Length: 180
Image (cartoon, rainbow, N blue to C red; front, side, top):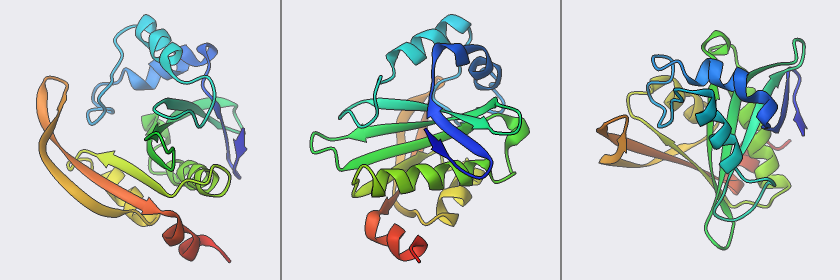
């Protein structure tokens, strides 16, 4: 479990399914997401398909973002461990709409990125973002990611072809930005 000033970040469990469904099923708030569940059963399958331990190559590990004061699940953070050499990861974050624009995503991502670099020895972390998702673009740029690619109509999401921006952060850039 990771801890910040306001958050606990821990592995997601089946006990989280109702809270996860509550915000993930909101199709307007999650219009840039590739997965919007329509039933609790879809959430159960999603949780069941995630890796049971962190840092397994070629898997997604899903974390619950818990607000400390209320102990409520306010979002989730996924980490995809890429490649057989397991030195790269992809990261993504989804927050309940009531908790957006309050610094929670920044806080959770910074903590996870620091963990990925310092504890799991990753070299590079990427984020895949819809170009229309201006808030996510601002978020990753603010914490040090740089835009590396813009793929045109490269992903089939929610019944349509969409563009994909790839942002990346390498360990030495993170260290130079955040180490004392």
